[in-house]
Image (cartoon, rainbow, N blue to C red; front, top):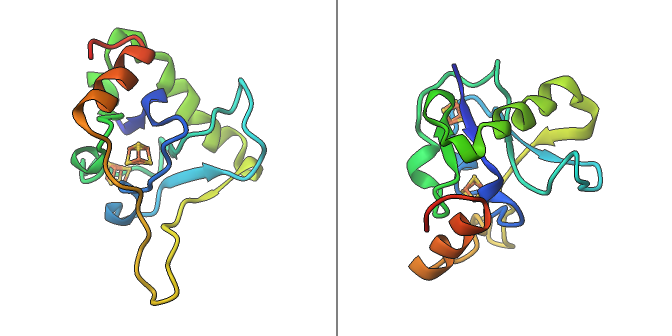
Length: 125
Ligand code: SF4
Ligand code: SF4
């Protein structure tokens, strides 16, 4: 079992999930995004220890335990697995730091933005 980052993460990349992961198993693309490799973060399915720490950190509610994935997002478990199948296309995601060494995160989305993003990906917003 592993947690899965769904397509709801697409183009967000605020990395709020990354700094709580105790085993650095959240990856980002180094290749150009494509239909096959969307611009989102990916959880490595065999490195993830299923601790659940990342799930409540995601402002877009994009992270699910694999057994809890909604039907509209089942395919995202396969998509996350691409970081294991194609390691050269990925690197461990890290939160960028400002000139004072503080982590830079995007501001959290408001409720309307979270709901609109859910609807975009086939979930009830
Ligand atoms: S469930 Fe735990 S180990 Fe897995 S990606 Fe989230 S924080 Fe990392
Ligand atoms: S916090 Fe959520 S939306 Fe932001 S990068 Fe992590 S998984 Fe993606």
